[in-house]
Image 1 (cartoon, rainbow, N blue to C red):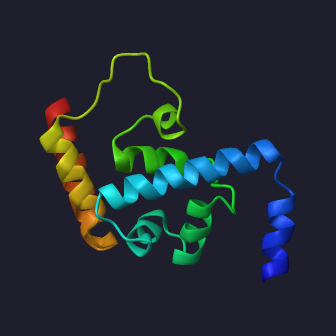
Image 2 (cartoon, rainbow, N blue to C red):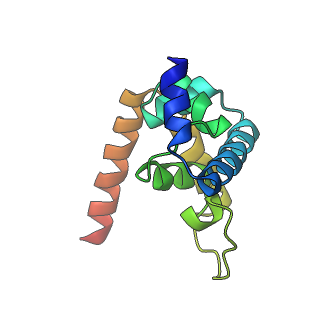
Length: 128
């Protein structure tokens, strides 16, 4: 297993290594600030806890499709998640709504689906 990780690590450029290490540290800090474990975060992303740990250590590249999921979970833009300054006015959910979204993200998948379906119904009715 170690040789697989070493091979993967060697496929990253030095810039990649620095970027993914910093990104992983940022994600770990945000996760801890949310009071989430690596296991909870891994479940949210539908990956193993070991993958989550390797992302946070910068050993593995985080797949691009995960960036929006992480940004949404933390209430950031993808640019902010990556450490870029967001010069545009921040627009997003109100603090109470953001807290509720974060709490829903911690629920089991079945309950998350139920909440999502309820929201879809309410949004559809409001649009009509």
